[in-house]
Image (cartoon, rainbow, N blue to C red; front, side, top):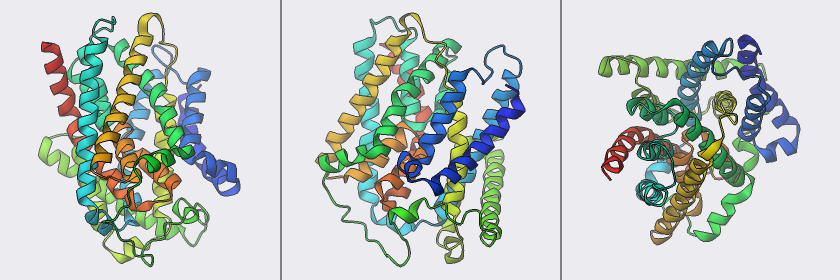
Length: 391
């Protein structure tokens, strides 16, 4: 398929999803991000996405990287504009516990998995372990950073990423479909440190991800104002990154725009701009379609399935250890859920989970935990590779 057609699909599909979301209840039950992921995977499995030596594959990969590097930085401030930062500061102690226990759970599960699978025939197991540490604490950005830093074999890199999608995607579907209720039962603790001012934020299910009015002409100028502010934040983050690192460092940019987004949320004028959260979600849908379209099932073969079992073991073990620690410290089920998603899947996956739970109070906590993961994921991955390499 022509690269320009694929690029157009990346932009058109989210518009169609928003339309379906406003018209049909079944679309709202499935979830906008899940629909975006489904379309992306269908594109990948259909063979429509050029890969390897296919004509246009290199140009498409460059386009995907560019769009992914823009959409998330634009989305995060927009999602934060309507949030009340005070809600997060009041829940800080529990958020820190959820973050630290999550990091401990992931590192511990990778260590255990390494010793259980080191005779399984997985090539470069220390490097694969490092990749999983980085992606489960910091997301795709850290995953590819580790792959480059450790000079991981391209086939190993593709297989690990492919199986990570296969393993993690059902977990997101499970949570979005109501699986979060299980964690509410296992962690039946209230968010006692959080108080909600109903006059400043409406957390009802109908208002959380409500695209009604997104296409209204009267809302358009204010939405564009919000987008303009987000673009300015991105430009400032890029300039600061150039000043500090001499290049465009995604971690510096993400942390900068998140800080600016939180600060901007204190402005009542910005907080009251209409549909900023939904506009941010639109960029997340673009990101989700692109990520899912990179899914590669055709590289699976031989003993590669062992990597899948290794990844599945790490995810289940990390979830279990994190759950046990959070229960000991009486962390609420919803905070535990967003903490786990923030690290296993990265911040862009927080909003749909928060929307499904109908609890916007944990939005900033989840995003913040994921962003801390961005900051430490690469360091943890390199450290893990060095330690396991010596073992």
